[in-house]
Length: 180
Image (cartoon, rainbow, N blue to C red; front, side, top):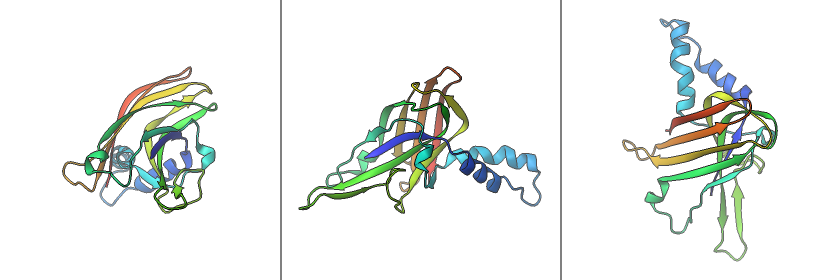
């Protein structure tokens, strides 16, 4: 099962920009800032997300049967609807998965959710170019798409459409990412 929830993690985002934005020899700093902040959003970040950073409800994106899954199942499109739990900011979407093994005498499994015990799979963070200012009770709508990359089948392409109309801000945008 793949799940989606928004998060606000300004410390991680600033650190990534700071590390990537250091100028290289022979390049002007303004060129570096022009080139690299967008690339931070091009590839999702695999990292541990503090559960206190979770701002909304969780939404199931895709359920896959591990005993019958096919490569074609990796290409999917899933609409989502998230309810904001508190006044806050959203700067990224976070995805995680749960695994349950049901063919044993005793059911077993694990979760990679932010509130679950740590696993080496962590969570996948999809940053936006900017943040959303949200109020409790508002709703974020969108569509999450994933498919294997056409040139390299081991890479994954993601497309996240966001449609948000809140009291303090609005966003209707399409974000494209590639996980190498």
